[in-house]
Figure 1 (spheres, rainbow, N blue to C red):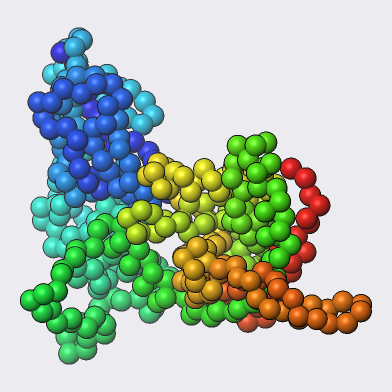
Figure 2: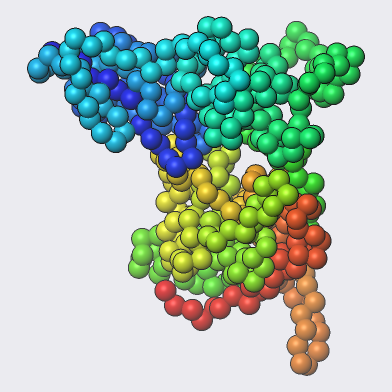
Length: 437
């Protein structure tokens, strides 16, 4: 019999860990090749991991809700074949002598040198001898940034049980002089802001947030804490776009097999405006501004669960309207069917959200960090409007919508933020109704 060590595979450039959310097999169960073995969740998406081999599940090294690092051994599967231990990783296969016991990557380790930079341990629980618990993600960041154990221990955590979160360690890196370091404890001063306590009556229903809702909540609070938000509004006349789409949508589908919606048209206008105002396509790192070379547009998508996810169209400036339409439809369908890959939600440089799909005329969207701006497009409505002609002005019915542009006032002033949204509206109003596809 051969024992196969199943490792957590690489699931995207920015994904270094995943939470085990559900084992689909238990020790003793038979499993076929490519049959789903375990459900995992990253900070991006949820995934089912298939088995790389057929056999019998012998052991699981992580329990539900524990965190594993990419490359960690998460299970052992016994197969028919020579008596040897085979390690299957995301990139290579290694044969290990049978006399060796399979190495448990997430075994607790004792940190004997607290003064040295922290190492990215794989344990899902606090190693023996540690005074404070640090998640694998926090340890990984500490190792990468050469933060010593002593420095890490001084950071005041804002997480549960005062644990240091990703937000805490990034704040420490951004401004060490203003970071939450307690070299001299001051118990009489409590700088933490506590949420108000809600009184629950006997008839109230208590609903626990699911994992994704907790991630969204943390991300939104972090964004408002990091960026001073300002929102500018512009009304755009999109009559030509509405009439053009109504005229071509059947032929477009017959020709390309794709439904053309307003979303790719909006994204096309945003991309053109970003080329005109590239300082909208930036991010902030401390006191430096990173000007992005790629234009990757995120499109906020509502899931059937009621949660929100933001798949990203990579290099949107290289796609024509047909290419954008295909990308929008594919990502939206994959999001609704829980088929997004981690890379599908990473690398965004600017985000658009369609509040009009819910009948809203405008909104004040929260910036999707580490980006510095986001646009909400409102519902398209028939409105009376003054139409100017050489023969004089008259009142007519036009299709209009509001564009809401929220931006980070640390790096985007009102002039830039306002000019950008106005330019997007200009491109929409000047849409070429003679274009072919």
